[in-house]
Length: 78
Image (cartoon, rainbow, N blue to C red; front, side):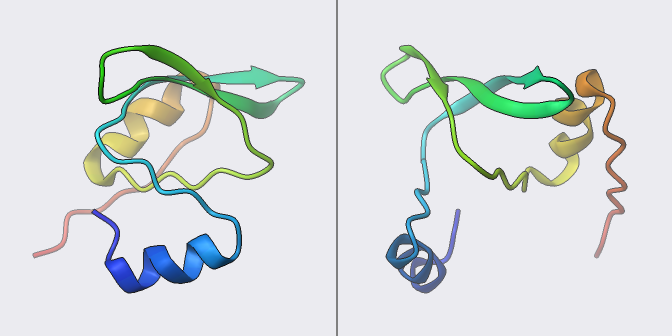
């Protein structure tokens, strides 16, 4: 979950935070991510397009990025 103050500041700059969304895969065109295929909170499929993407999925990050050839170095922290 995104801290409320961060979400508020990001929203002022046009960033949208989505909750309850399951990310399925990334669409890639010409080596660039062009969209995210997802399932929304009501179980409807959707395609989300943006000019930039941030992946913050903790230990799940490598699983999402591997199919498009991106190696994510995620180290456990305690």
